[in-house]
Length: 248
Image 1 (cartoon, rainbow, N blue to C red):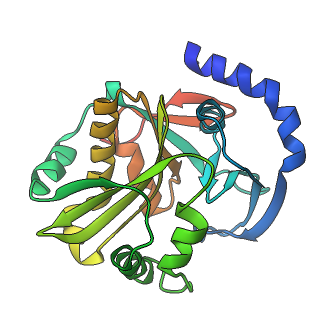
Image 2 (image 1 turned 30 degrees about the vertical axis):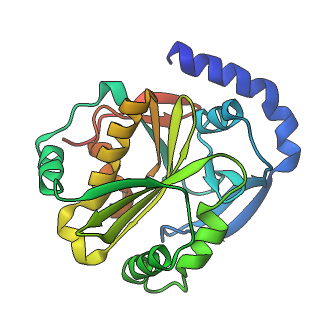
Image 3 (image 1 turned 60 degrees about the vertical axis):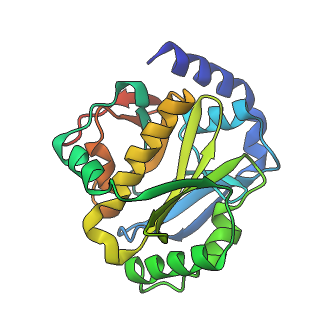
């Protein structure tokens, strides 16, 4: 464990006992369709300091709207937090191809906004990716992306002016948290999920942000397991960050 993670762990241990009374467990069907019930351990928060959010992320927590949560699933431990240390990144041949393939994509930075354009693309993505669920783009923005906890932004991807992808991120002094990414399914051959992470890495380097949190790595879920192709990466296992092996 690095000195940074040791200090984060010590600081979080000091405040964690006082936080426990705010958290509750909520059992739901697994959102990733694994054959187990899922249990969210979550709490609502008002604005958090940059350091407090940093400690939550460094302790394996995630953000959903104004909730911070982690997983307490009784029969499953498939959801593994994954993090990149951007100064260490080494792109493989496929990732360099993705960068080349998307040289014509325009990138813009903007506040998180509920616009007709954003909602339409988000709904197109959700209906293609999760057709069995009654998901709406506006509800994703209102209940998931927008928050009163910490500053965030959108990283929008355009092709000839048309929105083809959008990354929602939280941003702090030492960290960036990838909240969600949606894209136009018609542009699937561009590997926009990979391109988004490559863009986040570049943005962190330019802003001198050392840690990029990518959410959960789930080995048996295709939409979540490509993250281990970013090398090196770190996974949160048994209360500490360990360098993962992953695929080339």
